[in-house]
Every structure is written in structure tokens, then in C-alpha cells.
Length: 159
Picture 1 (cartoon, rainbow, N blue to C red):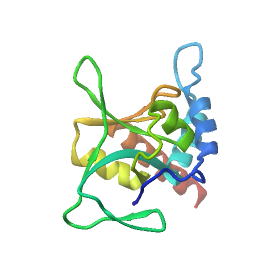
Picture 2: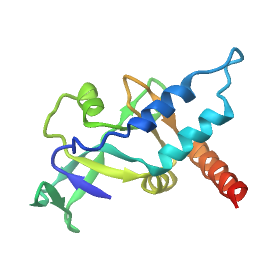
Picture 3: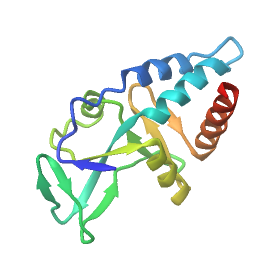
Picture 4: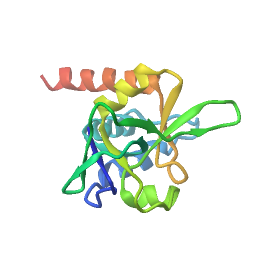
């Protein structure tokens, strides 16, 4: 997990975006194809996503990387719906982040799939939404578990 003062423009996750677009297409019964879900899971496992955060106290800085210490408190930004569900926004690119929130100097954390798993398992009251406002791909604890099961089966098949 890394924290940056400004989102890195080199983080693009374009293959993940393509996989999400394909996965979000459903058949005439409203079901996602197994192949598109597997492709999405594989890309999500490899991705690093940008999550906007707020900090209390100012972290140190070295080459645009913020140095965190014990006295730095980080809070994730979230969106709530009418039912009280809290969604933590995650973004595939800086462009997607800026579409959602035009604050140019927004602090972000880069999180891996494992980091997202930890975050959702730590506090079950949150759900991740990837690229809110455009793709709106929702990932909850159930989806995280499914992704792990599917990828484990794929690894067993390859052996």
C-alpha cells in the first residue's frame, strides 16, 4: 500500500476496465457469463486501484510519496445511499478519479486486491465501488470470496 499526494498518471488498469465492461454486459436472462467474470477476477487480482483518502496531520514527503507514521490518521472517503449502505470509491485511473471529484491534489492510497480484501473483511459495513459515476462496479465481501474461489479453481485446472 502506497500513499501519494497526487494520483499517479501511470496507473491505468485499462485491461481491468475492458474486463469490467465485458462482465457488466449480461445475457438475455440478466446473467454474467462465467468467462467474463473469470477475466474480470484475474485482472482485479493484478490491479492496483486508487482510493481517495483524507489525513489528519501532515505526512512527510519524499519524491511525491507520502511517508506515513503512527500519528497520521487516514480516513477513507465514502458515498452513502438512501438505505445507509456505505461505498468506498476506488478508481482505475486518475482520469476516473477526477471525473468523480475534481480536486486535483486529492490524496490517494494505491491498494491491491489483498488490501481491498482486508479492508472489507475488517469492517463489513462497507462495499467497494470501482469507478463510481461511470462503471459503478460494486464489490462486496461475497464477490471477494467468489473471486478467490474462481481463481483457485483456475489455478488447479492449470496444474
